[in-house]
Length: 630
Image 1 (cartoon, rainbow, N blue to C red):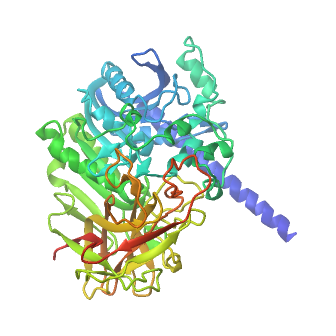
Image 2 (cartoon, rainbow, N blue to C red):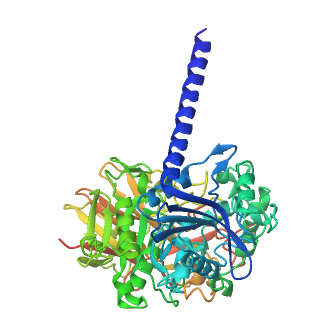
Image 3 (cartoon, rainbow, N blue to C red):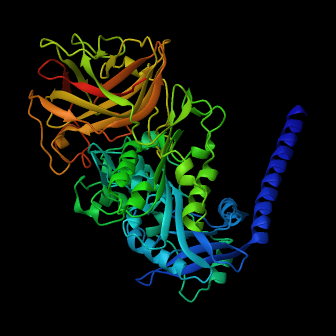
């Protein structure tokens, strides 16, 4: 009897929650209908005749209005599985009630949009053509702002290089996959870091590539009303079987991972064989730092996203190289302590992984719409004067700070050296991170890296990997018991120390393998032994002389490696220490180096690499820390 009552209560509770959700969805739509003209499944023509599915929500007014434009590969259909989906309606309501038209469009080849999809393939033409179409509408005031996070942000930079006259402002958030080459970073849209593949795109493409395999193509005679009616019961969204990517990413060879889980073929198989300098990276929709940039931008970055370093480098690049002074002065930046696109999910006690960041909230809507009000409506709201150029969250002290530059002007780069007596292996070794220059007789630290038993990724600055990695800041001290992780730690600080900016690492290494990887992880060590990760990087040794060539290693020879910079803002309280882990794998955050010197992506068997880190007066392995002067 008790079980029956419990089941009945559970059913009633589920029914009430479902009903409340339905009423809330209908309420959003009702509010939107009261103030907006709604036009869905408009098929917007591109220059080559392909039409892109577009929804328009605009205020009921005779006045011309500015436009907020969101372009996405994701499903924004208003219906799914026979139920109303209110997310787009909510975004539209937020914009329309502030006097904007809200336009959302699927990328070419996605859902109801015609053509074939390519990851960041043709946004420079499709984005430009969309601007021209919107500007020509009788209700448009000719000013367009672009807005979005992740894949709704990544196309914005390349189209900004075209400087369309209507593209008045942009707000890219979590935008790293749209950045090809900028400064020291050659990540080609987050596909690589340091020449190693970032495996997030393997899992992401599994669920995104399906449109090019099989989907219905509607006749060009189909009207918007026809498509709206079809979309109520058929939203073209595939139902992908769930994959345990913690196991799926272990499959070898890497080029067959998606095929091994019976996923779609196409983009992944083409991209996995590309090298970092492949000409194809420069033909699509990535932004590279040899391109112009002509749009005032409010950039949003987060510490535990996959690409804070390249994103910050792009902000500085545009500040220096925008097409004119107005553009250069019109660059602003926010750096939050959250995961990928989780800005608005910050709370009074924001926990990222296991570490509390305190109150990390910010009035994002106020900042974004204040930005658009200035650039799209011409409101004299003083946002350029009253808004800090850079707002960044400092972890540890758990507070927002501001600066006119990134990094702040009061940062003093300070060199710390790796040191040991030759036994820095694991948490229990003798590795130190010290400001003292090493002596000439210091012994190197050695470890063996076996691709069959890589160091597992635990937390980190990552997204989109499904069950494989849980991003964020996690206690690393159990990981540090491994003998294939070298551990170097400063003495506990007597006074608090803040690191804010870029962290540069130089290693002198040797190996008996033709090629291998070297990984670095930056950590905040608490007095009780907990060790929370801040950022991480990697370099595939064959690319030590540049990503335009591959140079293999010779057994026992010493090589200088300069790794891609890390970035953070963290306050190390009194009693805390800076720690650095060095190894040769961080899997599946990055793909495993098989250590053979061959292609890697088509290999199933690797060899064990015996690697060394040298740290003496001749080979001073070191890290430059951005210490904030008091």
